[in-house]
Length: 178
Image (cartoon, rainbow, N blue to C red; front, side):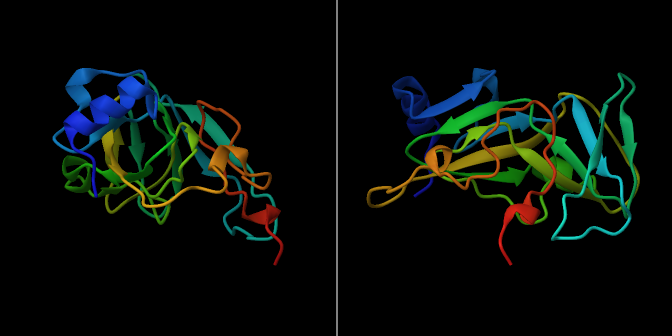
């Protein structure tokens, strides 16, 4: 089940959902709008290797915005830091963003119970488009779960994205054994 606005508010009140900064006007009928953070990043290498640490160059979005180009994978970050202690958060792009030809995630739209961080966005565009710091970019949807959780994400010893950050985080696939 997807939480409604009233349920999201109740879960924020109880501490099961944390959103910082929180703005009541960003709460929708069954979602919460998140915004593009200050930083973007691109990979240094033109060919990425899943077995190695692919380094990124991080840069700040200027006041006049930044034009994203097709064929480039940009890593962005949400302005909002979130915690989810009892629900599965899903991040989806806003329809207005999609209508500009912007995809905000390639595959990683689902968080885990216990995820406590900003969200790294995997941004691609179908045509050049200018983006701005703090523009609405996505919406968080919270799903109820059935049953108890054995290990919350923020307590998993092998969780790769626990370090709190305001900048995009590159793939940590290289930490997997394969």
